[in-house]
Length: 241
Ligand code: NDP
Image 1 (cartoon, rainbow, N blue to C red):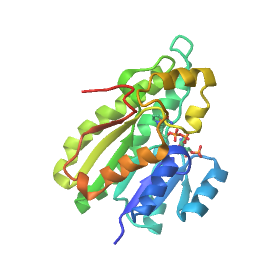
Image 2: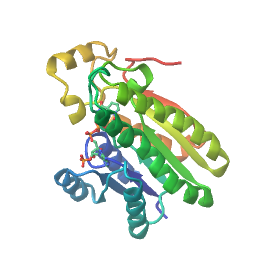
Image 3: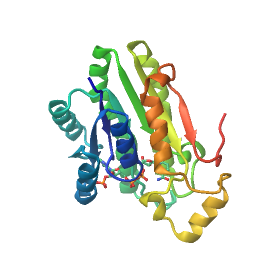
Image 4: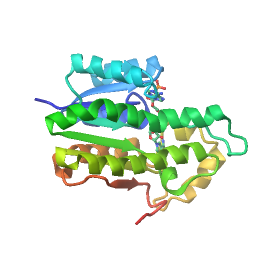
């Protein structure tokens, strides 16, 4: 029986590439999204998956979404916490709303979805949880105190959850992409982007498919002994120990 994967924010950008790759790998994939119905419809039609609209920051909405996926495809074996937003401002200008929005969507979402799927994974003695953090959670970034905090939080979250569930056949890992060529990065002013690329040793932005390949590896059987790991994929821009 094909395993069931949920990719949050799975209809655009990196998430869409992850959805596409997991479909190719033979999983039954549910792609979640927030509100861009056009992108979701296109993704669903082109990849042959069902798109599920809900806000990952809302616990009750997550519970309803997971229940719907359960009816359509079965219980979730592979959870990819990919949905994320930015609300950039330096701290001295940041509003409470900008802080709260990013923490809620980029960090609390992982609690919501893991909390709602982990008991089933533990009962079935299998699970793969893959969190998508960021280079900016590792190194910090001016104008992104909220985002850097949420993404660093995901790394600690991953390490703790990995230990709690290691004996239950569940692996929990986190990927830290560098700058990937998606709408999120295309929104950065051209001059700033040129400056960023100059700091990437491989001399280019990453591709969404390259992050999808990392997810595919961590979801697969070859990665069964890898848990609590931080997989850095950033073209050498920030090299960690
Ligand atoms: P995009 O903005 O291209 O896509 C974001 C996806 O997340 C969309 O499908 C969007 O849905 C969904 N989403 C946003 N908010 C919510 C929400 N509240 N509930 C459910 N779904 C939501 O992002 P990227 O592909 O660029 O980024 C994907 C992940 O990778 C993020 O976590 C990001 O922080 C991380 N990342 C990205 C990097 C990059 O260079 N792009 C670098 C490092 C990390 P909808 O289409 O409906 O809006």
